[in-house]
Length: 325
Ligand code: ADP
Ligand code: DP6
Image (tube, rainbow, N blue to C red):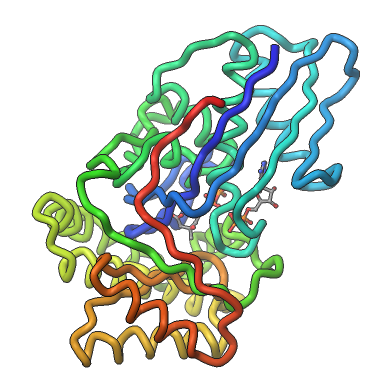
């Protein structure tokens, strides 16, 4: 009753930003991501008859509090789904990604947990069913089941049975690279969960955000199909800016950016002015991810590393979906 799974994080090019059902984690819009090979989680789940509660170790440290509750709550769903209510687990997870700093540790974390826990119970699930289950741990995690370009279809049903991710193009379709610019790898103040809720509940700009999604999705999928990098990058960057604009219209207003974030954004725009096609995107944290093509890797990395305040630049290629170890 033991299994190990590895899942990569993903970076959203069209963001998931808002829920219509918080318990089931049902989103208000479709989103689209690229799975990254540079950041991942490996999780081993061991269901044991002698345990009276779950035990969770993250990076060799025992976890309690909110992060522990999220994991046991998720395992409760798994136990309930497969009729194993009396079985507790020893969970050992390692993040090859900074935790809770806007690098999507929750995405790789819950995708690996869903895959390892269901496999440990001897269950074989379709990718669609696994994505649907994973979604209930963390929304963006449902996209990490697949490699390459992935769309999370929001679905319409109240029970969430049509809300899961589907593959758009595999990792080998197009070698789009991502440089993660590490400015501040400490845990953030406003989690993505809290930030999106505040925005949905209070931001005057939220409807504007939703209105832009359908066309962004059509255009970005066209860009992916034709490997049109300028198109992909321009849409991803504009979509990111509109997501972050909603936070400024929230009550109380907030932003995930700091002065270094803005400096990196400006540098990316300057790279384009001198003929280097690069575009940025930012999740719920100050760090910036820069999209570029392989032939510009050296120039992009050098430029970013030279900036003051940049602690590290981690390069990533398109990554694969779930694997079992
Ligand atoms: P991030 O930008 O890193 O995704 P979030 O605030 O969205 O930040 O999510 C971080 C939370 O995800 C952690 O506090 C923890 O609850 C959960 N998490 C991170 N890594 C793991 C893991 N390997 N296994 C289970 N849960 C994890
Ligand atoms: C800005 O998936 O972390 O990264 O569903 O509440 O766990 P929960 O939120 P989460 O939010 C991710 C938000 C984002 C955009 C994205 O990844 O699409």
